[in-house]
Each structure stands twice: as C-alpha cells, then as structure tokens.
Length: 255
Figure 1 (spheres, rainbow, N blue to C red):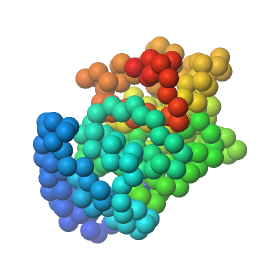
Figure 2 (figure 1 turned 45 degrees about the vertical axis):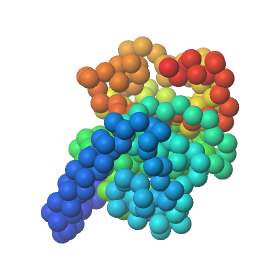
Figure 3 (figure 1 turned 120 degrees about the vertical axis):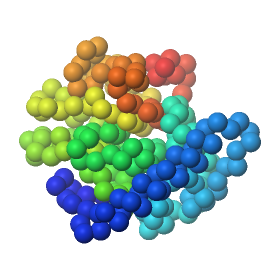
C-alpha cells in the first residue's frame, strides 16, 4: 500500500506487464467459477489455492494467514466473482479477511489507480473495529499500490481532509463519514466498486437514528442510493454485508 503521491519506481513497466497478464488469467478463472454450479466447485482450503493476485497472497503469507476459516470458504469465491453477499458470522470467525480480500482483488483486477478516486468504502460501527480493520488491511494489502485512509472520531477532521480525496480505499465509522460528506469539498463516493458494511446490524440501528439518517437520503451528491450505484451508470461491482446477528428486519433493509 502506498501513500498519496507515491510512485511505483523503476520497475513499473515490468510490473505493469506482469499485472496485466495476471489479471487476464484471474478473470478467466473467475469467469469459469462464476458459471459453474455451486455444488460442483472445489472450495479452496488454503489461500495459495485461491484465484487471487500474488500481491495479496504474499501479504497473507507475511501476516501469517495460510488456511481459510469456514466463513472465508463460504464467502470468498462468490465475492471474488462479484456477487453481493449478506452473511452472519461471529467475532473471531475470520470475516474481516472475507471482505478485505475481495476489496483488494476487485480494485486490482480493474487496474484501479490514484487517478480513479475512491473505489472501496468499508463502514464499521465503532472506532475500535475500524482501527482493527485498517490494521489488517495494511498488513494484507502491503504489496499492492493502493492508497488507504482511516476516518474515525478522535482525530482532527482538517487533517483527514488534506488526504481523503486522494484515497482509493477508506475505512470509516458512520458519523465521521457523514461529517466528511457534509464538510469536505469534493468528497465523492460515486465511483465505488465495492461497498462493505461490517457489523451491519449495528450500523443499520445507528442509521435509524435521526443524526445518521442523511447517510440514506435520496439525491445525496457524494453517496448515491444503492440502486443507482448498482446501475450501469455507476460501477459498483459488489456489496458485502456481515453481521453478528441477522433477522428479517435487517435482511429487508439490506435488499
């Protein structure tokens, strides 16, 4: 992962050619997987066996991740194929990697760059959870060239405003996201490729409160409604939603 303004260095042409070849191969593998019946797919047990980039695999190895958990085995391949996910998983089940890997891979396969703006938005209900997600993202994504930012309370908004519009990925809490939507000039989420709601049951309860209601308001210029984001005019490839507990109320609100 790089900070805004960082370059690829002298190896860029060679790296770019290798990336293009790898992306082509990954698209082919995932295209076959997407068209195959679910019961005929061999579910990988190790990260090295997944159709993901070498950059992500190297980050996983360096972070000490080798084998998939149950939730990762269930969620990763559909998410990598661009499907929307709605799942329930307990704390400690490995669900963070189940959405971080698709976030990295979607942007990588789309050759996302600093010129493309914000491609992935990960919303978490609390500052502590957002910090944990961001720390894991930095570890697993360290070989990629994406820029990433953390928007949470307890930090100066003005300091975040200096960099937020140059980020490819953001991890944030609902309150701080709303603050930037209202106060940061040029803040734009309209080109999102992946939207993640972690602990979505808690987030939806927060959004139900009047102070967070603007996150769902129609016509918001920097965060269009989901049905618009998923239309051909936008590029949202997938929405990944995890919660600790699901009931019909939360399911209906995520549809």
